[in-house]
Length: 352
Image 1 (cartoon, helix red, strand yellow):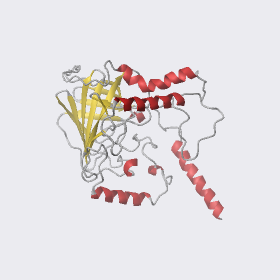
Image 2 (cartoon, rainbow, N blue to C red):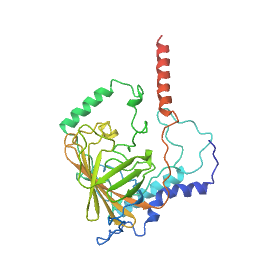
Image 3 (tube, one colour):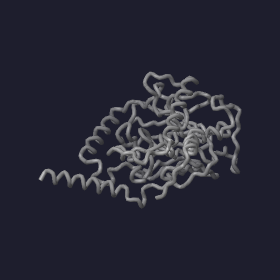
Image 4 (cartoon, helix red, strand yellow):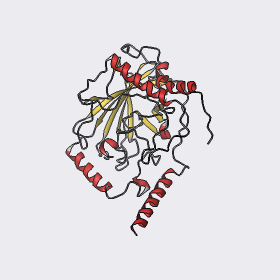
């Protein structure tokens, strides 16, 4: 791999671009209320046109801090986004070639150049303190009694194995199966959520009876069929589930069931699997030329004590989405497992 030293000014400009790409695409003040009389463009099938490249990158967290109000003041927005910009600028400076290696267990990153931090998520003029809007706390609800029991059973099962005992014990993202974001469900979900780091981009394609959503991360693809739902055969539960959509005015309403149980809630609930009753309803509404309002509701009474959901703005951008290559061919998992076997052999030798 080759590298070149870029001028500091170039790196700073490149880093700041990750904060402003979506904002530059907008033609209106993001703190203005959306026009309730807006009529989206339509495609050749007479449907509201959602096609194009969109990003949901944001520094607004999924869950609200306990006791926090649901909406930031303008001063709070300026302060938070200012600190984020300072972090990006500082992290865009040339890396010290004599820096020490990363500490074991936390390789991290040397700089900010490839991160997309984004701004505060603004929905209909309101800068939100969380992406979750209900329950009123802006936080994930507690697990149901069955959810607690299944979590305990899952934790007991995982405790029997080491983290690197087998490739199937590694996270789905390590194995390039699907991508999920830290502490929630992932870029493609459902529900769809920001990555928290980079590559928050999706491409939407439509025809008369299908809507296809392709994520930049691991080039995951969801195919949403339009029309009357035809249930899958019992026991068939694909990644991202079985999604069916219909139009309600200018809104695409998508209901998803039969999500693969392994594609469950990750870090927040220690990878508790979805139950058979897991169901998500999503709504995609183009509210102006540059924004899709994405709304979602999660209903899984066998896992959660109550339904929960939220809103995330998707911002249009005109840049090309490039191919994302995962671990195929670079032997990352094989090397991780080989390293674990080496550590075990060293430990065994020290005992003998």
